Length: 374
Image 1 (spheres, rainbow, N blue to C red):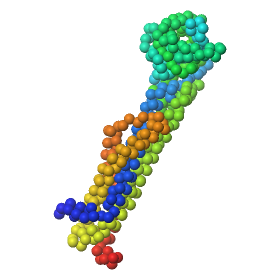
Image 2: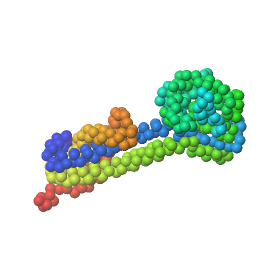
Image 3: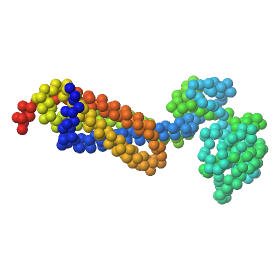
Image 4: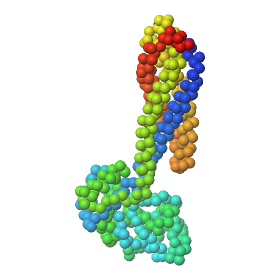
């Protein structure tokens, strides 16, 4: 027996059909939009944290350490690289008149370059200067005039010529030197290199705490995150991740409740049709299928509408996040499609479950009782 015709012959005459479709569409659209934008935000925060090396740099201190111990640490799990920084007392004078503090860092640790470029030649002595410094009289000195030039530098009485390859905007008073220049300085005076500290870079920010604990317990070194300015990003990422989990759990519960309420109301509205089906000889399993088809039709129509609402809502949420957090969320159609497919599968499962749980209500419906009520 074909159940298609009885399933939809009086389907569109339901007085609450538009209300059900409208309610479900809004609920589904908002949930899809929120999950989609939160995953996008989580991905951006995750990439920012992974790409920001300050979240992975560990400052290690000790009264003394040997090159052998440094090599042992390089072999530790989750260690990306190890290097010695310059001694704290190291001083630098450029062009015999401007005092700066020299530093050696990995290229990823350098401040943002506003003009020029980062180090690109390990055979040439290269430096990066701040755009401006202030002299003893408090006057502004523009160092960007040296960009591309060879300048005279003196670091702890060691003279050298180095090329200025980049300029950064922050007024830090720091001159960054490349590896070639550092090696030259150390070859003349190894006291320029720190004797009581070095830097360990973890392969992933998630392994930083593990490495710090290992350096403290296994080697008895002092170890701490070198720069904590990136911790706010990690906290925001952890919060976003937690919210995604909460939203996913809430969406399952919320949609189950919404679907259950609507299906229960739908069955109440369809009492007369169900009673008629019983009276003309339809079996309970056939009536169950008819109700299921009608409910899935409501869900299908609602889902199609909810996709358009989700696209609109996600654009609004993305605009708000971009305005408040200065994060530009790039549209990811593949992710949106995946979430939508998973969501419709979830709704289908919840719909079938809810109809099955209401099968007792369908069994209790009969024409005689309905006539008595009327």
